[in-house]
Image (cartoon, rainbow, N blue to C red; front, side):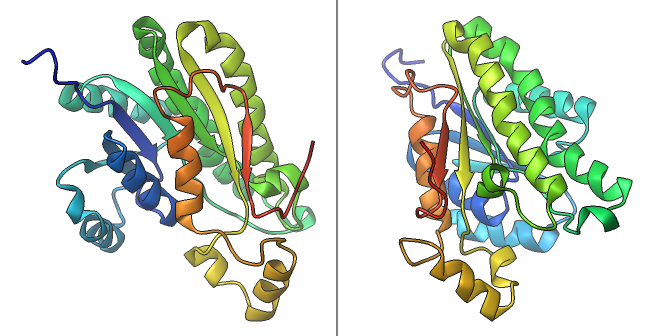
Length: 253
């Protein structure tokens, strides 16, 4: 091997074939990363579309099935990735689900299903990469939260709690790993032009847009740009931060 040729950093993106996940994969690949998009295996139609969308990247993004809600499954996933591609340098946790209803109607199943993916999933993946990152002295972890984790949202006590927890987790892990060359940051998207928002009733969607100071929904590229920035090799002095990407919908000091 030519020592002057640098091996690409290996990046895992959970929820990698979702609306935001696909664009995050694209931008990381364009930044020179070898990207592994992780998602549930049973989404054949979406996976075909994902592969078609990223066909121009010539193999810089590959799919790997995995269930972030299962601790042992995540360990097996990380083992497969490292055997095939090398050590994981970058982890982006973008996997998430919703189970919306008011608290007085919420079932324990709706609470626990969401927590297992949106919060336990962050623990499960981080726990399996942080040791090797520490040993090598380099790592970039970005966890996706949400503006609703900052503001709360009607009918989302489970989602808002999990997304607030994501940043609390990240701040604590950032303190544990800062001297190991690992940064841990949060990106909190606002309302974006994704299938989830497109399904909202037009009058409600119009009201949401009118409340966004920049006057539009975010795009997946807006979110991916923030993730790419925080995972750069030279972004080593930013850790424990929450970067809101919400068009000014929620501002705080």
